[in-house]
Image (tube, rainbow, N blue to C red; front, side, top):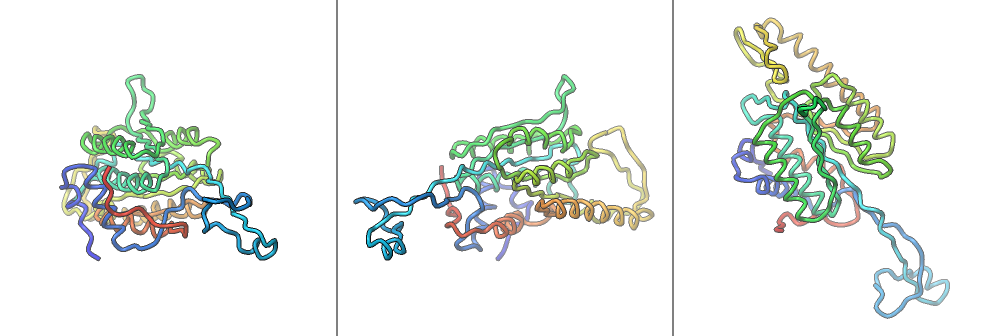
Length: 313
């Protein structure tokens, strides 16, 4: 199956088209599947009456009682999903492809597309920067399931991708707010971040999982961050603190840099796995369709079909 390069997706005209293209690419290799989301539980029996669904007849009860009974079901409350997007300064980094922020925005748009088509409620949390008052900036769109809500979410993500990242609000602050939003309701929380802050964001993630929330982390890193491919004296500038610059010969630090980066990634993965959080390291040169397909395949259930790949609203 051929997947589009992320830069090809970036050239599409709108976030709606990007999200749809990514989802169609991911679903093209799948057959019967569904995301774990809202589910149905058996509640009680009732005697059959004209017009009842014959497919819900309980034949075991008929064999014992010689009367027709219908299994009644009750719908569990819909699962609310929160897409948490890191828009801090470091997410603006791009090597030879698109920025980590763009990758996060397109991926969040595709996930919102699938979840809302699945009739799950989807909310969006974007963190990065500070308000004029000095309070950390966390933008929040409450979870809703209607199709028009998808357009609202995609519009915010499109603006985010266009305006770029900024500031250094930490993941811990954002997740503590998500914990308040999700209080008392089991929710799905999907984080898209490079984790390049000094907060205890991973600790909050594992505590959210301990409260029975379904938690997943997409750890986004640019290939240049993973490999440090630069040659000759290079000026490195902090995207979150522009005045912080350093002149370095990459060749002299490459081995130690890669060692420390591996330790950082392995530590994040270990913390997540030990805490029951689904961890996915994602390079920003990886096709979106592969990333989404892996995520959906992991969460296949047996209740029905994923939405059709084509959907107009």
